[in-house]
Length: 446
Image 1 (cartoon, rainbow, N blue to C red):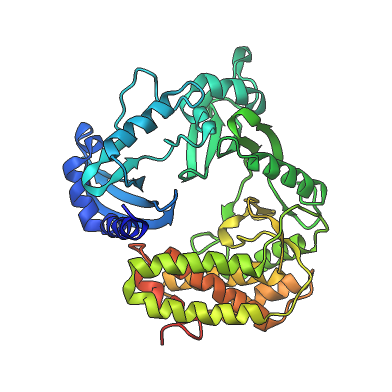
Image 2: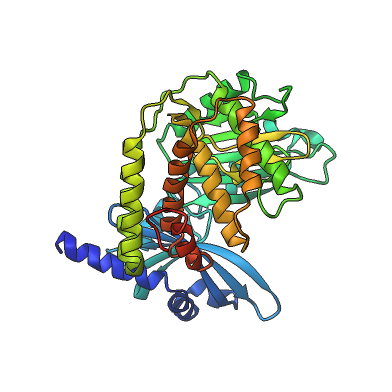
């Protein structure tokens, strides 16, 4: 099969896999997991679709499952494959059974990983990932005891009792965030956060070293400004896993108890401190890299949403032209994925998290990323843009760092809005917002 035909076939497969009613009907008929537990999918929501392997994609779903008495939400990943999906399932299950992964018992059959041939899909639940060896800690109690008991503290008789390991966030093939908790009946109950990354990937070590350096550069629990990061505790090289402190606090956003004005000031101060930090890291990020990433997303989204093709291309042409006109600027230490959900607040301390993308780049990128996510969150909540929140964020940032020119911030904001439009163009809950998002870009929809 030539490349063009293969791409068209995968595009059509992805269209079916992102049609909620098609997926709901098919899975209610074919998914053994439901039949074995007397469950039924009441609603299917497409959260996101993203590239996975060469020419293939993953769709993240949220299903509302009903057992006849009550309902609950169940996330799942649908990996779209071009080969024989039954044979591919056998290959993946074999890998998950291997001792070093230990996510499925050697003699255990499982319906947590299922072949759905009519959708050309391998469907799996979070926590089943052959690329993340650290997930053995979520499935094998002996491994969890061996690696975590000293960190969680000893219980009675010198044996640490780990109550549970909970999946907080899973990006298939990339990372999984776990919380490991000691038995809560123990008065010294404790918990840690595990960041499980790809096998043979040194990113866990890079994260650990970066967090150690930030801790030593004033982002620690004794910081006078109360802006800190979780304390890095240790790494498990064999499992490509970083272990860190489980800090208290809520992610910033619409649902927290803190006013949006207060949140804006907290976020601006935290970003200003990061940009002011003299720490040097080995990664940079350029305008060319941003444009390459955006071009790929616009191309994919245009294939799947031909109704948006012209608006997306017009927006990309505008953003590209504006970014390329920007004069050079001194790069700073930047987060590169800075927005409300990367910040925790407990009423006293502000905690920055997630340093996978830490690098040196244009400070306006982080500022624009935060503002764009704020605009997007407002659209999700059905609210109009509030300039006061943005002003408070920029003022708090400016107390520590020199603020870049507003034109520069505006274009990076628009670049992020274009990326968000692509990321959520297939989302069941957000696709109706795309015209509004593109409307924030001068070349977007009117």
